[in-house]
Image (tube, rainbow, N blue to C red; front, side):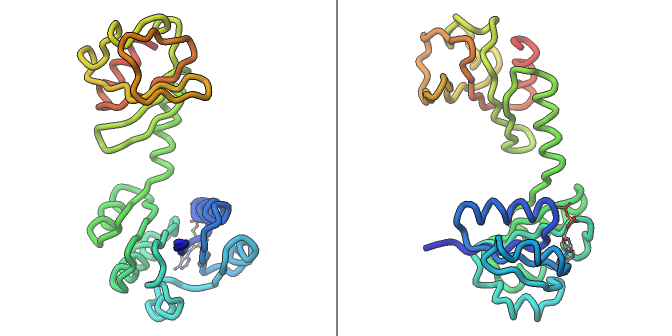
Length: 218
Ligand code: ADP
């Protein structure tokens, strides 16, 4: 069955989620208190509605409980974001993702039961800082406070060496889970195959170990 989504708050973040979900063929209800914003989404979302989501009756009348996933992307108005999340939770929405503005906001959202709290500016800042520091870090995905997955391009220093020679597991406590070579993805890389210049290593491990590895080889 097709999943149904509701996006509350059609600023840059919520708007972009709405666009992407619609492009993926999902049913999306776009909601905002601001009529002009809602009008912009009339032809993109399945339904676009002007509503103040801090009003429980309004949310009830939209049948919000029946959506599989509700995304709260209310930006600066932290009070409205918290109140909306609380009402969604009380109404029994099964999956709620909320955008947090700062760490305090995130703490409160977790406490009231948001299933997923995202911090797009902070996370994107971290990702970008990793590419800026090293031209060989192509992507960086935080798994938790301590662990991440990074994509690292094989440079002259690494090329020609095998995974056995590099011994990253023993030396750095990192695991190379896959290698991208052109169009090919090698999911269980052989330990004695030499790496080629331009290969992309997908590495999982603790941030401190990843940083040590980046400093040593990049
Ligand atoms: P971004 O940083 O993602 O651009 P904004 O703060 O610009 O976020 O956008 C948040 C959106 O949330 C705005 O379009 C605003 O009108 C909407 N919004 C704020 N409060 C409510 C509310 N109580 N109900 C519905 N939408 C709201």
